[in-house]
Amino acid sequence: MNPKTPEPFSRADAALDRVVVLQAEIDALTARRTEAIREFAEAFDAEFTSIDTPLRERSRRAELACALRVPERTAERLIGEARVLIESLPATFASLAEGSFSYRHAQVMVNELAGLEPAERAAVERLALGRARTQTAARFTRTVRTLRERRVPEAMAKRCATAFLDRAVTIESAADGMAYLTAYLGAVDAAAIHDRLTGAAHRHRADGDPRTVTQLRADVLADALLDRQTALDLGPTMQEALGGTAGELLVAQEASLGPFQGVVPTVIVTVPVQTLLGGDEPGTLEGVGPIDPVTARRLTAETPSLYRLLTHPETGVALSLGRTSYQIPDGLRRWLRVRDGSCRFPGCNIRTHRSDIDHTCDWQHDGRTDHGNLAHLSRGHHTLKHHGGWRVSQPRPGVLHWTSPLGRRYETLPDTG
Image: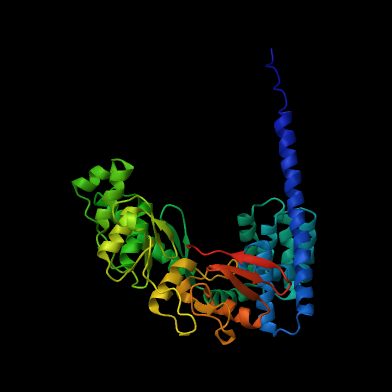
């Protein structure tokens, strides 16, 4: 007797069909967005010819970034991708409009086929599109790269040299007192660094270090860059703490790291006074975000090069000099640096120590040197305010109201009052 044939999974199958259909509609909508972005860019350029070209382009991407609530770099990329897809990759754009694959697949085509002659680009595009429907974006990237190198192998050296100019190290804050430090390097250097960190990690493990290889890679890197002892003292107390409670582990970790050597003297740690007295409120590390109270107290106590700025209840900083001085004293500068956190243009995350302090109402127009008329602006946004068609006011201390060339209004708030 044959076993009963299972009933078809009709509900799950129907639901998955809806997911696929909706995803295709979303993908097709990104093509319509691309058309609209291209139309916006062309219209903006035509309507603001009075602004010099470099500033007009900066103002244009700032307008789009504010409207979409994305970084300006993202807005600039979207404008560039729209131009390339519509003008240089029409077959890719048409397939995207049909919902055949994701916008990420289209971005792969834009990035990987940049710099090719039109005939070569069209040939690689034709071959690659046949595989886009069945591959993830990551796999598709490798496919397009392989097709490109086979078609035009001599272009790789030039592209590598150009890409090398973009090498950088960036930081991005994360939750729970952590941050991502990312290095964009040449592939050979990156692989060599990773291999060396891995080798050092395995040596520590062979010596009985209880940390994982992943943890050791991070610790060896940090210790090397901050001139700390790489081999941490993992005595009986540390061993016990590693198997103990989270609170015990926190204390043991703090004790094992020793003095915070290598911290840049201009880093600002903001510590509520109650935390210094043993409270549980977190401190704030400039450019990173909240840090646990144990670390905040340790930094304040053991690192004399750090500015110590208490947030409760008075700082003692002179917050206003009125019209008596254009120059901003150091105390007020530090207070503004903590208050603003970053450039105060909408969406800009350039940190305050790399920004100018701008008089919102210009000094030559009777603007005052006080906290209610001062704010940090990156050099580019400082220029945009004065020459790029953007206007700003500060109706309340620390609250900035921006008006774009198109008349749209945006508000930015300080990190702390």
